[in-house]
Image (cartoon, rainbow, N blue to C red; front, side, top):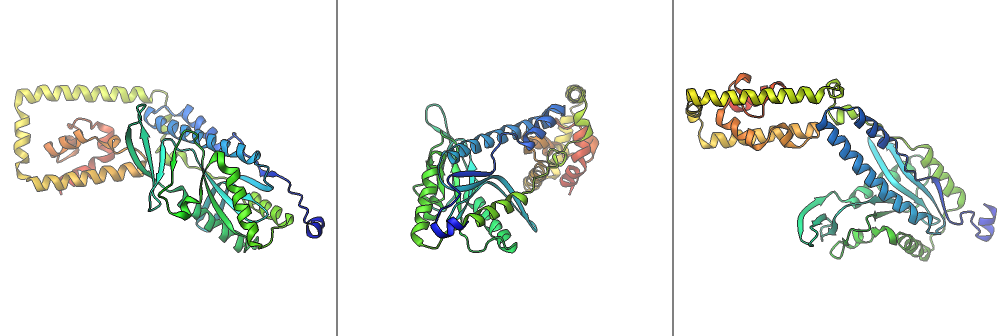
Length: 369
């Protein structure tokens, strides 16, 4: 420290990892173990999808890690830091502590091409092998996400007297080598935060050179290490309630779960077949249509909207696609038959005993009110 004060000689000579990047990820291992135990194929698909997304993200952070290790920039680096403050949580991919500032890196390995418009909105485009765009979708802004991390980190460091006046900057690292990033129309403040991973070293060096010109002084080694140690000590590992997230029950772990579902489906199909035969004989279809003449088009449209809202609400609560609750064909059959009780609803194609028990009461109420 005295050498640094007297002669400006720092002990931080290059990139030094205080908390290393590792491909060993507890969440990933937990999900793999969970996937191996869950026998419900539908819920297993959601778990496996999250495993794939998590692997993809880790691969992106690995690209960033390589660039940081080979940057030759004097700085302290912490990977995967999660801090809590009151009701706020910040999960940060990388925190860099240089002689002039702190920087939070948010790593994104996004598939598709990314463009940012004048409003700072991120739009992802997918192209066919012939170069034709077949899908566009908006995505949550990683810049907004990282700026929130900065606000939380500033508050934590200030409230705990770690540091108050050290500038904290944002860097959003696009870690997919195949993605094309178009930020020509992006606002200047957003444009300056986004960098392709292979340009990360230059991005950090340019920011250091910019801060040097301000002559605002440097952060001494002791302070750099004290900040890094505080962050490492106060890192809080995330805990996940997978049973809640995937709506898991004891039934989902039974070896014969899918066989039971298959039997139930076959029974439902047999019932449907018998119903169709019975309908042909008794002309009950005509009777059902006649019973719906009391509903005008406006009534039916209102019921359709309410059923769609109910379907969307249930899908959000359970984290499943809306069509898992019931698809559009089933919805139209409900509107055609206007069931007045669960016994009527079970006659609708796509509704077995399980779904009627789950959703029957609500659907009957929507239809009849």
